[in-house]
Image 1 (tube, rainbow, N blue to C red):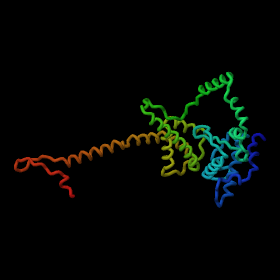
Image 2 (image 1 turned 60 degrees about the vertical axis):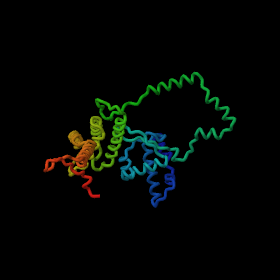
Image 3 (image 1 turned 90 degrees about the vertical axis):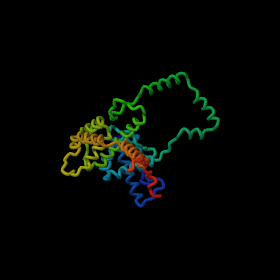
Image 4 (image 1 turned 45 degrees about the horizontal axis):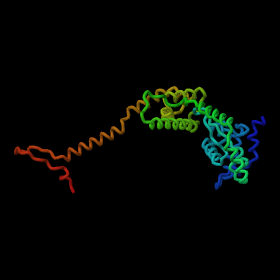
Length: 311
């Protein structure tokens, strides 16, 4: 138990003045510093002894501290600016983000860097240690080569939630890169949407989250995000006991409706080209002289329309 609370014990005696931002001036400065300290201690209760592997959601932190979700987001950003907190990867799709508390930065322990040691040493020490650093034995070279080969063999697993592959890939790689960036952005927006609409949609269960992940894998995060926005903008939202269950039951029909609407939209480039072509033809027809036969049977060239326009 003492090992699990080591991170809390290390930072609990640090006062609120340590949590002040550089050149920060505010009437509520003391109140903000106390809130940041409370959030840091709350995060430390979820951390390993060295401050790593914090897996606490925003809603859980807000509920424990009695704050709003927006306030918790702002306080986390303050801790990141102070250098006390670092964000890691998500535990899964729309999962909890892993975070790390920099305990040494909070308690003010100086970190000794290698460059400091070199500068403080004498010239003779530097000259004597430099050849030792540059020279390597055959055993060390073989171990370095083996470690490099092992790093090449280790590859990260593919993302389970990338959009389904298409039959024919475009020749240019730019559209593929743009689509992947849009998917990643949509996934982040889905996670933010769930947090922002927590009061409207309630908490999502593990089973419902699995169904949502399957929906994203089959249709893409962009369409699922549009379906969520349409569902939240319904004219009447009262009397719904389980909004997530209702959304997932109608998600396929909603996504099919969005796809149909996208297909029925006219191509903007085609419309613009058609308008330009028609305008050019009309102008050519109006400005080109035409030969007509007059009443007396003689051919007469009509006046150019430019001559008829006022100067």
